[in-house]
Length: 496
Image (tube, rainbow, N blue to C red; front, side):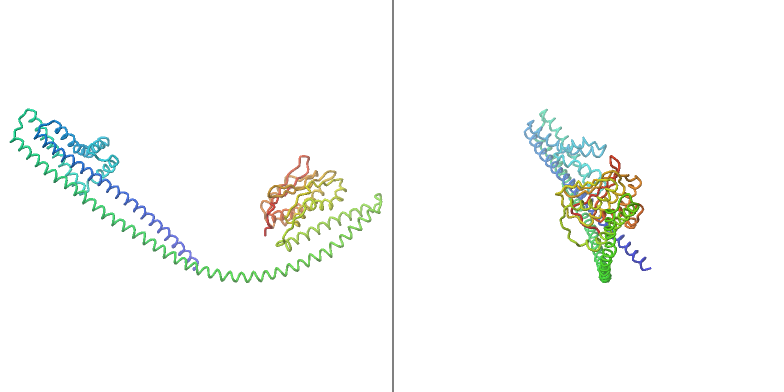
């Protein structure tokens, strides 16, 4: 029940954290969204206000030149009147294009004619499309329409004046009357321009207020989420500290148990050393004695005698049993002595040659020659005892399976590794046996390595190669037989 409750609280905590991050991400995204479109709206409003400034300026200058034209009848003033009033007509053209079929090309031409910046045109179109139902913008557009109508009225008045000037009918009384009409138009359009600017000013203030509210809202959400996350983190840290304390208590207990186990292991190691010593003295010594006696008897017994074969068998069996016992003793010492033993540099050639000498006599009985091809200058610091056992077992296996042939044993080196190899011309390994040892090595199952389906020698070799973090390969030679190669990194340490 307690475990179910803990799992539920953990899932709830994880869900809360994910939810918080989702809320924070959504709030940040909304802040970016709101600020982006707020800036876009303000930028477009600024562009409209700037355009209105050019619009008003064009109208005012056009009005002045129209007055000059009335008073002087000079054509240059008429031309300037038309060119300046075209600025206002450009704004009217853009508004009409946006209000009807939204011809972007016509809108752009109208705004450019109205002296608006080309970079602001897209924002101005966007604002017109999306804000034409908003009160401040709708009011501004209405004032814009009225201004366009007054500008058109001013232009028609100008055309009438031009006609009067052309027919020389513009007397002083007519001039006064026309000036009064122009002043009335100018007064009305000034009111429209002020109303247009006031509408955008009001809209800008509204947008600013909405922006403050939106920013405050989302920032409060983010602060709240961060605060809640902080509280969750503090709670998690407190829980972790409690767990850590419990783990420390358990660890102290484990350390005490390990210390006790270490003491027991030390005692067992001492016992193992005594057992190894007993094996060395009580088993190896008699075997060596039997081997020596058998060898002596062979030297003084004629080969034609019946007893010669028995003596030879005794010598061969005692030699193999002595070598096997020695290998087991050396193998046991690896686990009791070599773990923390600092390895010294030794000659690889001398080590291999020691093994060649051991098996040389047995190989001669099989009419087989053993050759050591190792470079005499090759030295190594890789665990000597382990390499000795590996070479011993590989050479022993080669000698047993080679009759009337040759065995080549040696080592080569690269920058960071040494490869030991044994090549024989014997019966060779079948593919099934090669696959068996290859799979056994690749799987690295310690329990299977103890098994001896095809003999214990190569199983020991596989375990020792794994201990050195090395690799082993079994291949068939070009002339038959088997090639076994073991590669070990020069700086590899023993594995546990």
